[in-house]
Length: 65
Ligand SMILES: [Zn+2]
Image (cartoon, rainbow, N blue to C red):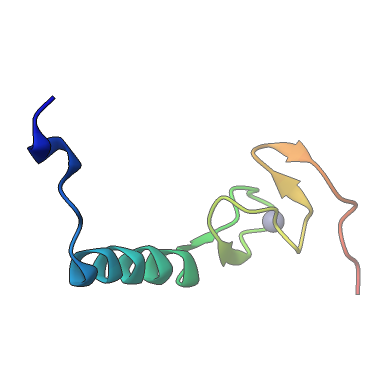
């Protein structure tokens, strides 16, 4: 075992990495709903609030207002 395996990450390096992670989590990608009868713009890879479908499956009952 060489001592280089236990090299400490510098403070700026850790903070830079955490800042990038936070930025990625706080800004979701917006994409239209894959449901052709909906097409509501929503954050990608989440349950659609308008039609209640996710990945081709009906998860919630659609909202009607
Ligand atoms: Zn939808």
